[in-house]
Amino acid sequence: LALIGGGIGGLLARKVIAPVTQLAQRVSAASPDNLPVDLSGRFADDEAGFLAQTLEEHMQRLQDFIEREKAFTRDASHELRTPVTVVKGALELIAAMPAYQEPKLKRRLRRIERANERMAATIETFLWLAREKDEGHQTCYAAALAKEVFKEQASLFKEKPIQTKILIPHDPVIPAPAPVFRIVMNNLVANAFHYTSEGRICLTVHEQGVDLFNTAPLSPAFPNTKNSGFGFGLNIVRRLCRRYGWQLEIGETQDTGTLVRLKFAPEKKSGNEDCC
Image (tube, rainbow, N blue to C red; front, side, top):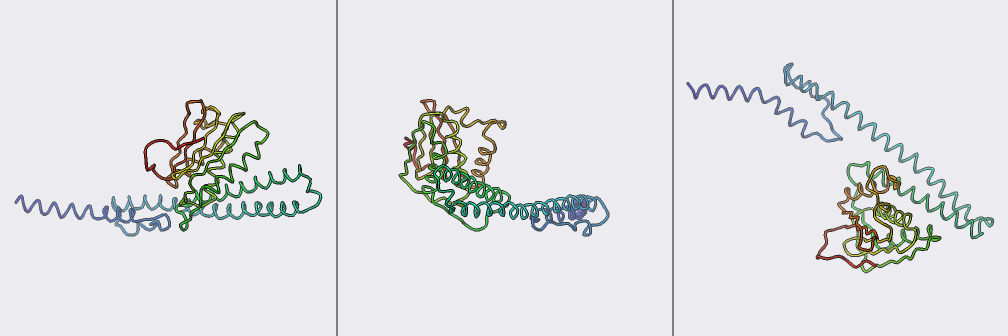
């Protein structure tokens, strides 16, 4: 009798649990591009059917939200890229005019051009962050981009009594799009120049990453609070580092300077790389 009762109980339990198991399998197999929005029609009008109906309503709201996000990303991509392209074309025409060959005007045009380029790169970065996955496998060389960004920022702050130095013992290949690495470096380097009143700023590109040293104290140079004057720069850098598996380390050196280390891969040996 016990064996018969146990067998009947097992069959009944399996029959009761089967709809819930089936519902769980359908939900777990769903993807953002293929959400199950027809769950309630596959189950009876019981507890499992009520649960399926509730999940269906939530899935429908989630589907609507995803569609709105896709539409926003698509429209923002077009509407933001268009004015940036127009400004770039207008700057090229203005720079070719004889009236704008005067050195002071040329420097101002160059600053506008650099700002426009940074805006274009920022737009691309935000669009990449909005995607769930990257499209294709893109790489870039770290040395040339890091050197270019460093010289651009140095020219913007050339009125400050700052000594600059660039060391490039290696030129690693980064498994990430070039605009993404440019945005990361631009935020870090611009912040170092902005908060360094005088002293030294040194950029070192080594095999595992990039080191950026400046003589400004740690707290004002790289504040950790959300309500800092650094804006969204440090936040976007950290998001990009998480996205591409990089490590960002910010610390204070013995001479009260700030050392920022951006690591693309784990270090192969113990000890610190030489930095200025």
